[in-house]
Image: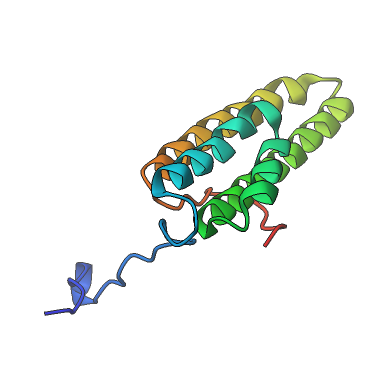
Length: 137
């Protein structure tokens, strides 16, 4: 009865894994955990890597969920910063043409994925960005 449902071709599929720390394991209330985890993703849009770093440092002793999500958001914002640097180098090499294309794409990716992260964190689910350098562990 506990066997996973068969996938196409009759092979069993793995149960979905829960990434990151679970909600409710820290000193903070679940509503506070959801709020700060959401803020760490959303404030990254405005304050780049500073907001996730500050929230992580302030709340790391209170909640494994907030710690996990702030590290995830911090890694993503560092990756976005590197993306902007690459866009600037490409722009300098191409006379600005490539920056006009790559720069806005990096910005749109930052906004979209940060909002998705904030929505998932507000639901109490650990969010993993589809692309991020895992520099802070």
